[in-house]
Image (cartoon, rainbow, N blue to C red):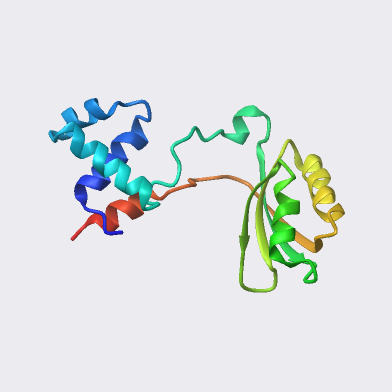
Length: 156
């Protein structure tokens, strides 16, 4: 879907102030309320806006350790079965199929480094994963940074 500068401005407004009303956004942008609503509806329908939900921050509720785990899977099970097994583990936040030496990359949250070992043991106990290698994120400078990309796509 092609996005324009007004789409990007709408997304920025709602990103910066999630509780803003459509009417308030229309006043700030100096466009009709129906225009803002129609654009939001179109971007949601086309997947430009994928979520409109609170995003809990693991660090804030006791999971300050973030690790990226490179997983080699049991090929006999296939990706769907492995993904289902990993989805049953609350500490596994994301899973991506990747190229390279591993089959999957998972982002995992843990309470501590030793708790990370517990989570890795649970991952291995699924028997869906045959080998793992992990790196711990020492600091997160930014994440989920898609708004600048949307704004760049909106430029002519």
